[in-house]
Image: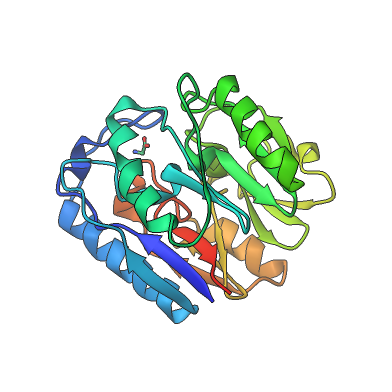
Length: 255
Ligand code: GLY
């Protein structure tokens, strides 16, 4: 059984952090409708969707992925790189403590979960404006004894590592080769995004399907051509807040 933790869209979402995108008018009610449809899709694909407590004063709090890294053995509570996001982690920690022993990223480390891509026992961590070397070192010390290898990764021109690369099947990643080098991901083949869709590298595997934003049809077609079962989801309004499909949930196995 997969549990998917989510959190309601904050009414303050239009005041979210933005790093690589210009601010555009954002319809918070439309974003909330997209989010509800996304949660319904997670349920349809077999997840037990549980909402974390609402935090209406924290604009980016719907992006729960950034607050923790959940592995089978441990949940590591992050220390988000944006100061405005630091108060998001407490309620995540309270929820995850029921399922896993907790580890914590501590000052001076900063780390967003969106920068962490776990493939098997390899934990790829993007060096970014949100995630620093102190946190990568802390993560290594927490996870190496559990048999994981932490691999720092360079990438460019997007917010998080998982903005430009995600796993879409066993030994298969989707990535934008202009933003991250494919040869970093040892043992994985790569599907590249449609060059007309540079932000299409973020996909979410769940229940044998791949959730992918419907506003990137060219890349969606490439995933289908590779034999994957793709489920398009509307994310156009949430994307204005620099969001992808992985950002809005924290998935954990609960066997
Ligand atoms: N708006 C998403 C983030 O900057 O964290």
